[in-house]
Image (cartoon, rainbow, N blue to C red):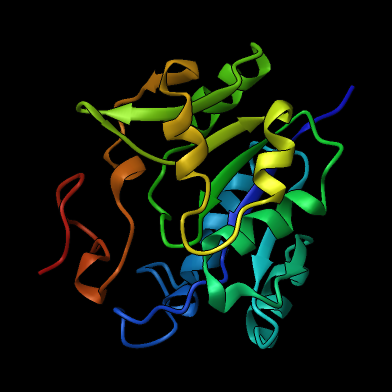
Length: 199
């Protein structure tokens, strides 16, 4: 039986962060992208991390973890290219659970909720918290051709918006599904209240 493959999009440019946020350590010392990759790999038997051609440091960290990497030569042209690269590397999958490298605070239960929706034959699925849809986002195999055709910076958003009725929304008690880190002050600090951000 084909499996659902995890794809972590980690080929971004970190322009707003001021440095390479993917390598920025969280309070426990783990680089942000590595923490996100571990979270995704904990629920997907096969996880692919999409990186840029010059990512030698990040690639070495991921390989040391036993994670699979795919280099997207067109990463600078947008997230759509990165996602299509990851899907192309796993075209025989039953579906894809797509996560972002700058969202390390997603709880395991949220990943499992979306994964279980796909295992129950949902065509599209994503978590929802406090009325807002978040990540990770899952796509069934029926969307293979559309995913492979992605370009630019839109990612899978257009696929989700084209068929909103088909999207299974998995209610989760997890603000982490909405938290992407764009600037250093958004990194949580030890001892802060749950869901709080550093000032």
